[in-house]
Length: 217
Ligand code: GLN
Image 1 (cartoon, helix red, strand yellow):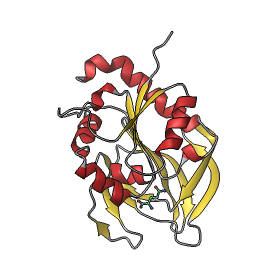
Image 2 (tube, protein in one colour):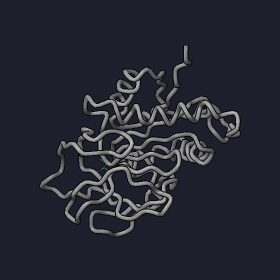
Image 3 (cartoon, rainbow, N blue to C red):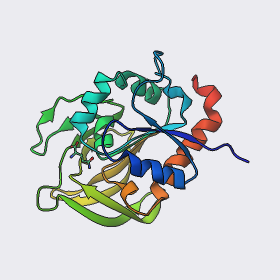
Image 4 (cartoon, rainbow, N blue to C red):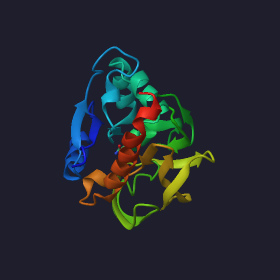
């Protein structure tokens, strides 16, 4: 029998329970992360085969990550190639640059692992929240997704693979991206019954776990 994947879900704030349930439905073992597990550079997070950063409020989450000394250990895991999956506020935390809805650069704590600039609350007030279906490359032709005060990627480096775009006020912009083992979605697949995005992430985790001895953790 294949050993189950062990996934950490950041549980400081936001929609972490829904991620947990969906990952468990996909057969993973899940541990919620609230504090580092030890004082090493990885904070004990190296026990995981992948980590999920949920949606919520990115400034609050960034502040809590800083206060609880989780920012550096998470960044270190990402740098070493551990698969990280951020949804909505989690995506914002992954990005190198963050801007407000007016396009002005913001300074808020984050991991800066994804070479992209993200705009917070990008869909405007009228369409604050919506549910839709669209193709995500490598995942499915009809992924279901819930957007809640969602961000979009406004620009990204050549190493960033755009997996999906959605029409926003400024035309089709990326809402699902991948750079190496860093995966980000502007929406919430965990709030639907569609498990395929999580299955895609778990596939990344499985591949990484299988090659792990070579990765240095
Ligand atoms: N609007 C939130 C932010 O900018 C993200 C919303 C979400 O995670 N659903 O942090």
